[in-house]
Amino acid sequence: MNIDRILIVGKLVSPVELRLTNKGTHAANLIIENRRHYRGLDGSRNLVISNLPINVYGSPAQHAHAYLKVGDSVLIEGHHRAEERPNGGLQVNIVADFIDYENNPRGKEASNG
Image 1 (cartoon, rainbow, N blue to C red):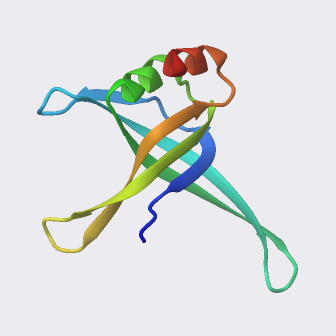
Image 2: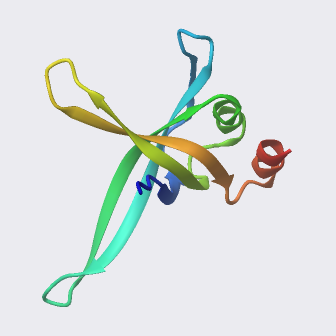
């Protein structure tokens, strides 16, 4: 059995970029800042900040563009997609299947309605 689910909670750090694919599907690119705290071996508290690119397709992409603003907190549920690079190697992308607009009730209504 293979399970490919990713859950990410973070804040949007740049405006949502909306575009059309060659097939006419809406696509959006989000960058989510994720903060993770952990204790080091010496007991010190450490923070790792990651900016994660997220791809969104279809009507969720349109809703993200319409309702998400920089600084909004979101929960992303999705999966990964690995693509071969022209010069060799793999690039792993995160594709959102669901976006929870945590602190934006207008966005929640639009995406669920």
